[in-house]
Each structure stands twice: as structure tokens, then as C-alpha cells.
Image (tube, rainbow, N blue to C red; front, side, top):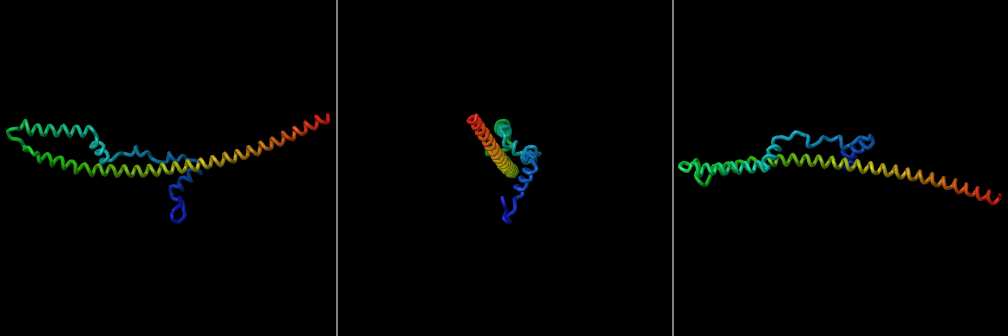
Amino acid sequence: MLDAEGELVPLDRQVIETVTSGELLSQQFPDLDANAENFSEKMAIFGGSWSFGLLFIGILIVLMMLNSLVLLATPFEPYPFILLNLLLTSLVALQAPIIMMSQRRQEIKDRISAGNDYMVNLKAELEIRQLREKLDHHMGTQDHKLNELRRVQISFMHDQLDRLRQG
């Protein structure tokens, strides 16, 4: 692809360099999964898991049971559970930005991966074109050799016919 000034885009330039040098393009990119995950990704993974959901539901049930049944005489929080609502709201307020940070990092990884896929596909296309040109050249050379062989065979057959007629 050409940019506004009519020059190759750096991705395309890199692909052409790897085609001419014979390097493998797919080995030039780091494995995106091998990168160390940051805190927001770890938290998003745990926060979106079944184990977190079940653990949190269990804690909520224990808190409500403890407050409602065990501490019946003097509950630390009466029925509407305002403190529990505050806890849930705080959890959501903290969890949402962490999940959004993780999604943003995943979007960056996806963009890098798409760029890598583009470069690998472009290189494959260029190499296929080179192979096709080589194959066309080879076929042309083979056709020329076959035609030359046919001429020699026809000439040989004419010589044999002439000998048979004379002899």
C-alpha cells in the first residue's frame, strides 16, 4: 500500500524486506499471550469468573443470614441492608474500570495481531506471485524444450522415411 506521498507503508516495506531476504515473518513477532498480564487483566479474569460469582453470592448469603437470624436481637444492620448495598455499589464502581482497562489492553493486542496477520497474508501473496512467475517461466522453458524435441523427432522420422523409400 502507498501512503499519501506515494511511498510504501512501513508494514509493506518490512514485508518486502522479508520476502527478499527469505526470512520468516511470523517468527519476528512476540507471542502476545507470553506477555506478562497486568493487574487489571488478572482482576478482570477473576472478577468475571464463576468462582468469583459463587464466592460473592456465598458471602452475601452468609452476611444476610448472620445479620437476620444470628444477630436477631441486635443486628448490626436492619433489614434494608444499606451497608450491604453500599458494599455492592462500591464493588461495581471498582470492577467496571478494571474491566474496561482490560478490554482496552485486549483491543490493543487485537490491533497488533490484525497488523501481524495483514503482514503475513501480504507476504504469502507476494511469495505465491513469485512461485507463479517461476512456474510460468519453468513451463515456458519446458514447452520450448518439448517443441525442440518434437522437431528433432520429426526430422528423425523424415530421415527414416527417406531411407525406407530409397532402400
